Length: 487
Image (tube, rainbow, N blue to C red; front, side, top):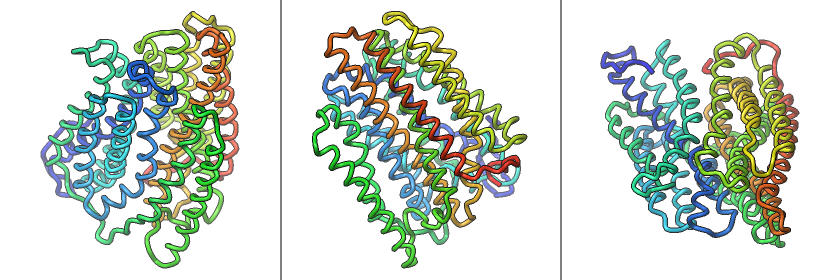
C-alpha cells in the first residue's frame, strides 16, 4: 500500500492516497461480506431452522440485487456524482449489516441481505471512476494495481475471519459478529470520505428504469425457482416461472434495441453483441463464476452437515482454495500473462478441471466420518486455476470492445460475474442439498450422504468447466501476449 501523503499530483488533488485507502477498504468489505456469509450460513440455519434452501438464500439474496443493479448503480454515479453515491452506498451497507446482525429469523436476514446487495451495487461501480479522477500517469497505474492484491487478501481472509469470529463467540454474538465487522470498516471508509474528490460525467447517460425492472424480474424468475423449487417438490409453477424468466429477458433484449434506435441510453449497449466475442465472454463469465461460488458453498456444506465439524474447520478448509487463487493471480499478472497473453486462460481452466477431478477422487476414497486431508491439495490446485483464469479473462473480454462501449461492457461483465455466482449457488447448492436430503430420508447416515452429494456436485462443476473452455475459445483469443489492463 502506498504511503499516505498530502502533496498534490498533476491532477491537483491532495490526500489522494488516503482516498485510495477508503476505496480499497470498501472493495474489500464487499468481498469479505460475501465469503464470510458462505462459511457461517449453515450456523445461521441451525439457529433459525426453516427450509434448507435458506442456506442458499443467505448468499443469493445478496448477489442477485448486486448483479442486476450494478450497471444502473454506475449510471447513477455518473449522473448524481460518484462520491455522493459511493457515500450513500457505504452508509446503507453499514446500516443493513447492523440489521443483519440483529435479525430474528431467516426472512428478516434474507431481506436485509438484499439491501446489502443494493448498497454494494451503489459502492462498487464508483471506485474505478473515483480513482481515475484523482490519479494519472504512473500513479494511476500504481493505484489501479493495488486493487488486485487487496482483493486477493480479502479472499484469503474472508472465510477464516468469518469462522474465527463465529467460533470465538465474542459477547455471545456467534455468527452475528460476521456482519457486525462491516460496521467499523464502513465507519473507516466514511471517516476518509473528505479525502475523496467528487467525480461525474459532464453529459451522463440516462438511467433505463424499464430495462432495470425487466432485468430484475427476469433474473428473479430464473433464480427463485432454481433455489426454492426443490424444497417445494418441483411443482408446475417452477417450470412456468423459468419459462417466464426467459420470456422477460427476451423482452428486455428487444427493449434495449428499441431504446438504442430512439437515441436513448439503454441499460446494455446493443452494439456489444455485433459479433460472437463479447456474448461468448458473458457466457464464459457466467459459467466460470457459477462454478467458483457454487463450490465454495458446497464444500462448506459437506464439512458442516456431513462431518458435523464446526465453522472454524469449514473456514480453514477453504483457505487453500483462496490462497491458491491469490498466489496464482499475482504470478499470472506479473509473469505469465505479459509473456504468454490470453492463452493462460486455458491453463487456468485445465488446472481448475484437474483440481476438481482430484477432489472427486479424494471424496471417493474418504471415510464418512474422517476429515479428507488430501482435499486441501486438490483445492489448492483448483484455486490456482481460478487465479490463472481471471487475470487474463477480463482483459481479453474487453480487447475487442470499442472505446465508447467500454463502460457498458465492464459494467455488464461485473454484473454477469455476480449473476453467475448467484446461479452457481442455486444450481450446485440445490444439487447437493437435493441428493443429501434424499439420502438422509432413505436412512443413509449424514456422512455418507454428504460424500455422495459432494461427488455429484463436483462432477457437475467439472462438466461446467469443460463447457467454459468451449465458450472461452469462442471469444477469439489471440496468440500474441495480451495488452495490459487499462490500455
